[in-house]
Image 1 (cartoon, helix red, strand yellow):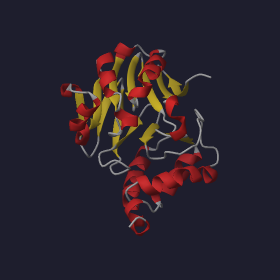
Image 2 (cartoon, rainbow, N blue to C red):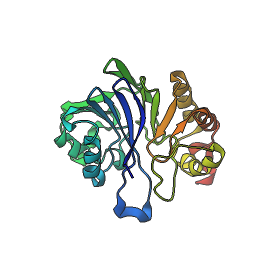
Image 3 (tube, rainbow, N blue to C red):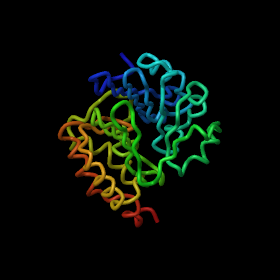
Image 4 (cartoon, rainbow, N blue to C red):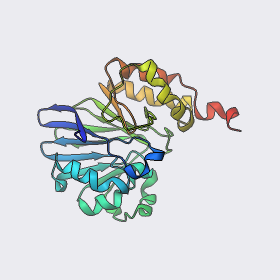
Length: 251
């Protein structure tokens, strides 16, 4: 089986999904997706993950773009399954590293010290030109990280949502799209109730996402939403009680 799926390809612009996991930890399995945008031979790597998967992802990415042509690497937040390999990617590439300004000081704990290579995102978000289009960074703070961003590729209209939309599945099921949202909610509910801060924050994010009219939502864990399931997921999240809304269950 191929270790990737092309989610979009047109006019030299590709959006590629990988699902590479640390197979030595199958007993505590959490499926993880990584993404790559390629524009006329230039790469934009998204949430490349932990140190444990670096070698496998490096080889997979190199099938689609020359490693020396990776221009940007984006980290949606600070977790090790997102940014644990930053030290290895800093040695292997000349890329700029895009992240919330909140997490820059923590990257040295992953072995990264080249702070002059960091593009620090302000809390309100930003956009970066990539080819003739722009990549947008939308605030996703407290979902679940206090410094967190989603990425929207204007060309493909794909939104990388990080942990928002994450599904907890018990075994590897690579490259799946959501087919029945009502059934899929069972894989979303527990994670979102505990890891998302509050309904107020969910509604703020949904409001920002609706402005860009995404054709697809691609999370870091689990399955991709497309077609009518994009709207069904946003409606569900907009009305979800979670986090601090449920304090009486935790204290």
